[in-house]
Image (cartoon, rainbow, N blue to C red):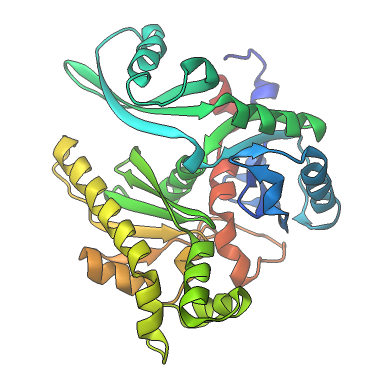
Length: 353
């Protein structure tokens, strides 16, 4: 898509991240340099509003977002152009190799290849791709397919709100954009702990391969509650206060979470092997960066470091953002803004190259 209007290219947009149980927005002031936050906000909503990635209660969700804009924005959001997140867990993402061909032939080739691994008719999907690397004889692509009903429901919501949807991005690709703003070129595994799942990606100058496993912050709470025979509210307090750190209940907490942690470690190791077998780079994965609400559980980084034999640390989405005179978010809320920060970093002119 192209535009001859430089004014239109420079019109700002904001990020809208509709998570499992909360909505986040953020706008950066592009006229004063990247990283200056013009406005941000978060609001909780009923998780039953969305079913399997498809919005079910449009009026309820729209009312929540309208109330957020009216009463819960720190600073201001002064544009109606928006970049919207899509849950990585509801997408089909795969790295593929194709013979060298013209750019205008790639999408059709991607569709033909996608039929081999996606268990849905292609007519029910939106398909796109990112070029990872062009080599002498072939090209490596990261392909993304999303059910049309997921995108269409979010598109309808933006129209109800009087917004103009300019881009849709998966949660993990948005997180990768944020990571790229903050870190050097060290090959890295990124883990975004959401409420319902953990999105994992290998990032080596760009996103290389992605995956999702079930079990996020909410499942940790549920498992602790069941093991300790306490309410989920009490389990949430135990999780956020003690987590995997040494405590009277440490062994029971670890026993409760062990199956989820084992699955996470196994998937990370698989993705590291995949990258090292396919990469033309001589550099190996050197670190793991965690983000999202689940990353804040005490003891998680130490546990992962010991299990993977790699340094693990938590990414602060506000590390490269400047608040100016705006009130900073609370420590509890900081980690919620990973995806929306990445969305807000999309430069308007990138959409019209």
